[in-house]
Length: 84
Image 1 (cartoon, helix red, strand yellow):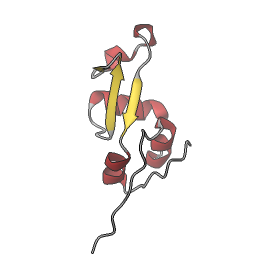
Image 2 (image 1 turned 30 degrees about the vertical axis):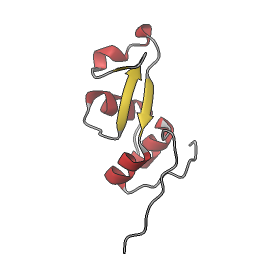
Image 3 (image 1 turned 60 degrees about the vertical axis):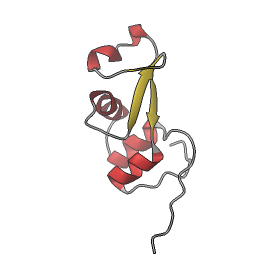
Image 4 (image 1 turned 90 degrees about the vertical axis):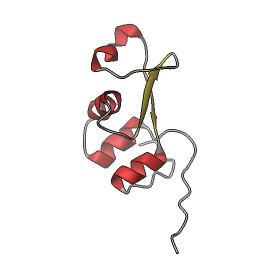
């Protein structure tokens, strides 16, 4: 019988996802926005950000949500709430 995995509430920090993938944080952000890294969502002012042209900071801050469950499904890594 499979053991039930309990995922913490909240978003996995971009820095943690970058470490799991062995990549730079900007690679994680670009992958989420472009859609080829299906582990979360990027939003600005409640609206999805889906193109790299929208990444410019002059448009305002982008919030990234990285799902603990989606990260686990993609990598096998179980996030336990650590920040880095």
